[in-house]
Amino acid sequence: MRRCLLILGCLTLLSPWVDAQQAASEPTEEPSAQSTDIPAGKVEGPFPLLSNIYPGTQRQYWVYVPQQYDASKPACTLIVQDGKRRADEWRLPEVLDSLIHKQEIPVTIGIFVTPGEVPPAKEHAQPRFNRSFEYDSLGDTYARFLLEELLPEVAKSYALSPSPNDRALAGASSGGICAFNAAWERPDAFRRVICTIGTFVGLRGGNEFPMLVRKMEPKPLRVFLQDGNRDLNIYAGDWWIANQDMLSALRWAGYDVKHAWGEGGHDGSHGAEVMPDALRWLWRDYPEPIKTTPQALPDRRIELLLPGNDWQMISSGHQLAEAPVCNAAGELFFSDSRAGRIYRVGDDNKTRVFKDQTGRITSLAFAPDNKLYAIRDAKQVVRFDAEGTEEVVLAEVKCQKIVTLPDGFYLTDESVPAIHWSTYKGKLSLAATLLEPAAALVPTADQGFMHVVPKERPFSWHFQMGAGGLLEHRQRFGYLHLPYLERSSGVNALAVDKQGTLLVASTIGIQALDQLGRVHFILRKPSKDPISGMTFGGPARDTIFVTAGEHVYARKLNTQGAVSYETPTPLPKPQL
Image (tube, rainbow, N blue to C red; front, side, top):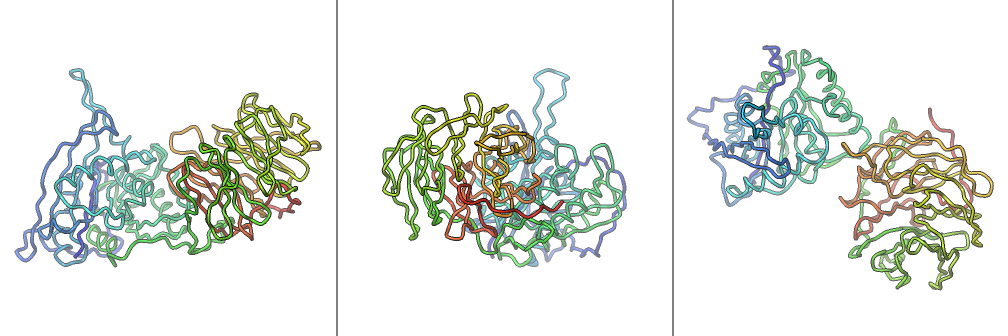
């Protein structure tokens, strides 16, 4: 049988409040670990572990090795936060012995790891206790610690499977949200989660998880939740309500989720009772892979996903792909700004050079004359005909982005900062002065207003588009989600569809805002690289193209893009 490594993180309790816990369903009684017919595994350790990701921290870990472990067969992984104390409270060595013996879960190595502490340099001073910082924080730091430091260290002694389907995470309280968060951030590495008395409250932003679960494109995760109705209710929130909120969000978004509710408090009794059944459920149907099951959700209101359509890489090997744009036929053009080339992707999906030795092209746009307009070296606007013949439109102008309309085009200027308007004959005028540089801009589909996103703000601006390209009545309008503890949304590109949806390519994904400026959905990015450009294209304008790093990606969506230089598209009245 294929081996699996279970990483179980040990959990320090916030408060041992109530003794009794009642299982939501009758737990299965497990044989004693000392039963002669059940081979007993061994727990090795503690082993010390220093960290560079959490500088100066010291911690310990223990490794549970089942008797069935075979070094010639890579094992799956499960990590429990808070070390051997949590593992012992859950009776994990005995439970794992029994379940592995009965082949109800794969052969599993357990890793029980404590949170880090930084010892003081001065006598009688307290250490830095890192538990809340490591466990309650959102973001990918703890997942990186597991993948870059803990697992490689354990893998020196044991053969561990690298498959995300073969790895699970578990924890209680702050360790529970930690287990969920690590899998949430890195579903490419972890797919199975057990979270008991989870701290999805406002200690360090964990209260945002139910909202993020509802808005983010579903991830391939299987999640078991446990809590009791006498859990903590303190300054940071109500644990019992928060866990129910998480269950509701996971169910609504279509996740594979199961729960066990009881009557206990913030302790490990109920978690220990339900742990055998939780592990059976977590590993049921193994080795079948855990997958997402996208479903149409009418309450989402903006439904972009099409079943079976994921990101596809359509071009790669470039130095820096940027500025994707499509012509009237929906064919894709983009630049390699470092190589000084413009490429074209034909109907045969092959990438060919459209124009070489162009200089640094950072923004492209087609116009009503079917010519390709480009910003070169942040100081010129040039245009190319179908054969690549070049013509200079504006020879000396500071500019970064270009957006074309039926009667002219807009340019962003970071030096002032400002937005300029130009006719296609090159007559330039000031459209609006800005409070800070614009990262991207795009008109609404009906061309009544202009969306502008500043570089380092959690919102978009909304301008009325007036006569002669004038932009007036600026308002902070669209709300954006930021990466954890970051001040910048990382926006570089915008697009709109014919329903009035604004797509914002940000660090956390492509955020879809309705006409009223509210994020309904966040589409997963195709890679870890920042998105440098985005556009709708394809014959039906139902494919979104993005550039990221050296690659170009495409994905068909359940919508149609609007084209800024074509006739305006009337928009439906938004739902309030």
